[in-house]
Amino acid sequence: MPIAPQLTHRFAGRAYKIAEQIRTGTQVTAENLAETFNVSKRTIYRDLDLLRKSGISVQYDNLTDSYCIMEEKSRSEKGTFQINRRCTLQHLRDLVLATRCSPWMNIEGVHPGLETIIEMFLDKLDLTQRQAIRKLYQACEYETHSPRNSTLERDLLRALADSVMNGKTLEILIVDNLISSNSDIDIDNWEDYALWLRFDVHNIYVHEATWYFSGYCHEHQEHRSYALNNVMNAALASKQPTISALD
Image (cartoon, rainbow, N blue to C red; front, side):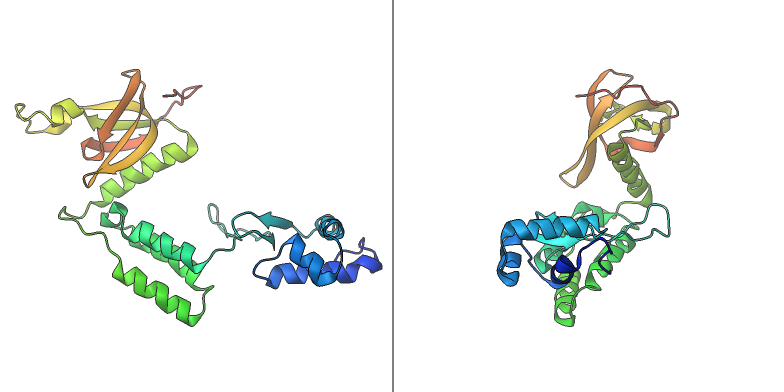
């Protein structure tokens, strides 16, 4: 990316070199830039401001303790995006452990999405690093005696997650916990006991290999928790409340 014309000739050379060092360096700080160019940190800060005014988006990444350049990328599809963020092999290791060894992996149809994310990172690694992550990916698994959850449970969990992300109320078709857990009640068809409830999802969690969610139930006007096994359907509520209920 060329330096914009408004940069004076006196500073353009150094500013250009600073931009190149930020692009190619692994940990670029004001201190090491000042040492490299034999100027004060205040001068470096002025040069960084000049770069920003010229249209180069220089930002400080607190996770890596380094300056980086964020370049806008065109988005070809709605909902897709690219991440300009430096991460380490250790970050990717933790991502594999957190996903491959989680109950989410016991649900049909979730592997392709995870593999897409992992492959996106693998493209940035050298051969040795790619081999190391692939070995870890193949070695990790979530082992359970429970049968693999269906794609229905996958879609229900995604609906719950979307509710949390977007702050939207869901309408859920659910069998009440008291009915489903009462062994004295003989129910041939649970659909006869299912109710539609409007629900603001606040938490999603796993306990003893079973998925649960909790939040505010508008019909009961209180905070409630349900097992995902009790849910038969979920959809975005046709009419959203003006103010979402809080805990």
